[in-house]
Length: 115
Image 1 (cartoon, rainbow, N blue to C red):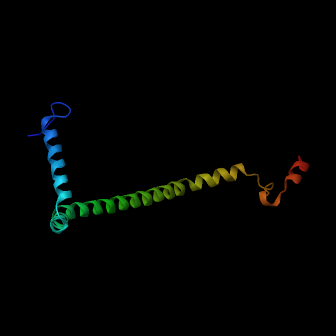
Image 2: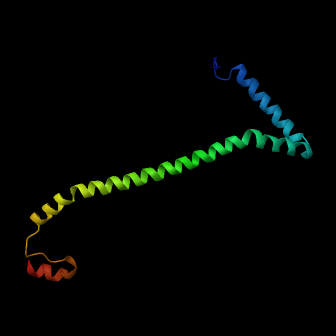
Image 3: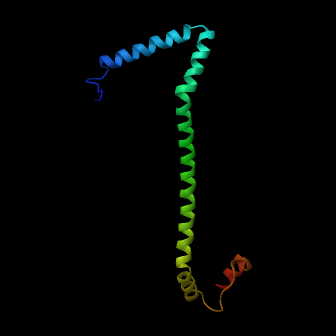
């Protein structure tokens, strides 16, 4: 059976809110000698499994991101390796056989003078 609010701010919501408010006021007024053992017990019983679950989730998220990164790198390498022979063949067709000069060896003045 699900609990659903019939309207915004139903009675159940109001009672839960008031209960939390009363408990928080009581927790602030309790002496420290009583509050510390109670809070320690809550941390060990209720919060410890939740914190462990949060840590495990963060670790899994990091691992998943690492796996996705490695997969992307492998896919890129495989794609490059697949098309490498075709790219080299096209480059050989485009490049003139004897007129190739590297960009590093040509200055701007030489290019303008030769044109």
